[in-house]
Length: 117
Length: 110
Image (tube, rainbow over all chains, first blue to last red; front, side, top):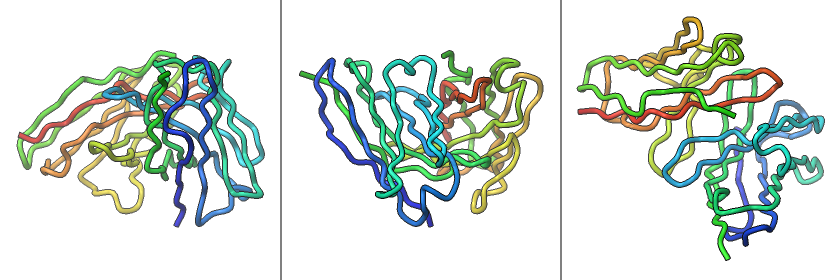
């Protein structure tokens, strides 16, 4: 069965770039599907960040588009998130997920990222 | 990017049925049959409960059902159980190949 695991620094300084990686097990990222990121600020709701197709085509939330990059690394069976110029408002739990035409059906456990000096 | 609108909270007694609404626009909920619902327990990742408006993934109880009318989608939980107490989020495809979540609804079992 497909499993996802987020990894990356838990603390990022303001104005720097947040970087997270999602490692996939049980499935080859090169085969199919969309893969993406969702975040949840403390005590708040879910926010879709963006998706990447296995071919590398990306789709981003318009409100974050200028700061977000999602990439695929097929050699490591991973995909990554980079969010630049972070502020305290970017403090959140970041989830990676698998998206099919049946919805976001597999999720990672989440990675907590705090933006603070 | 504006979120879909959900009631902040809904409650019911064990065994009762409750319905959570999710209101959007003709550019998202009303324009596509790509509405999904997610259950999230505290400190846990969301779990897909319904996709494509009314379909349930394998393993999800048939007590959960989805529907849509116009720009509003709904999730009904019948035979409410203590384990259903959680936050619920709707999500919809939106034009320009983007996605949007609802504001979230806290379900309390009395």
